[in-house]
Length: 312
Ligand code: UDP
Ligand code: MG
Image (tube, rainbow, N blue to C red; front, side, top):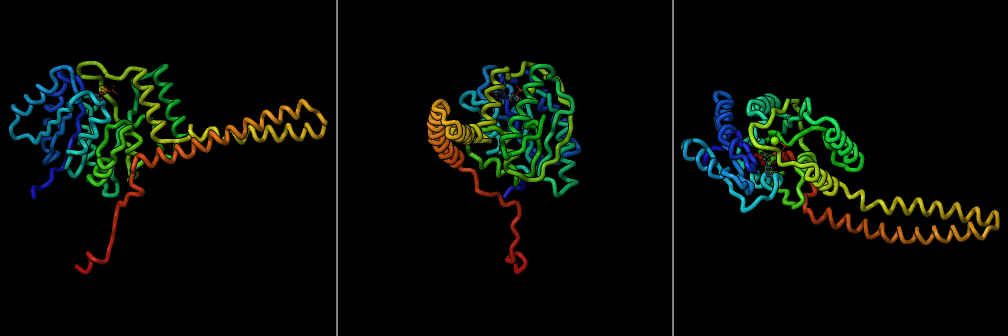
């Protein structure tokens, strides 16, 4: 059996023709003398430009390099590209990093050093010390994190990115989550393990433009909320409780004041309560079906100690 590499880099690429060569060279430069063996898993996510040809060129120009090139049949989105990368990454440590050099390979060396020095730490996640977005976009992100953290049981660390390095054990678990509607920030948090949040400053894009528009980000945020909380499906239950309480108050007033008007109000509210109750039942069952459909493991065993090793 071949010895595994120390580090696997997962690099999703969409229209990165002007970045991939520079990115690869920057990795070689940064890792020299620091990381003894590493593989780079490039995933071409249906780029419309020359990204794939450039990746083949990197392969041709660097015969000794441990390169894995995946060419997806079309653009599936960064989440799917990362999933593909996780299927091929075999290193002791696995890093997810963008191809546009906003996330510097030098930071990966710091992440690896941190994992080497801290055996209890399973993952080092980078978060942006200073975000570039201010104004409306910044506000939207703040609101998103507030909202999702208040309704989801999975904690979301504000400003944490997908840029992170984790031990193989954690990477294997992430690779095993096969849900279609993926939201990596949620997945990384849901699987647990000890994560250290390392501050870093994101650089400007080397070339090209970000593929995220406001609408795309909004859809992505919605995806995150839907994937990590079934709270909206349970809303009718809370409404039902409020309406039921209202109906009760109306009933008491109607009886005390012998008022037919309050009686009718009570009747209307009671009717709505019954309807909301029926809706909430559907919501609750749907929430169960939805979570089951993800087929996530029921629990994740980080360690398992048994007497058999001692006897052996
Ligand atoms: N990306 C991808 N598929 C997509 C969109 C983006 O693989 O459909 C890759 C992209 O090539 C880059 C990373 O995901 O390596 C982050 O994308 P981008 O730089 O556009 O996002 P931002 O840095 O603005 O969040
Ligand atoms: Mg970028």
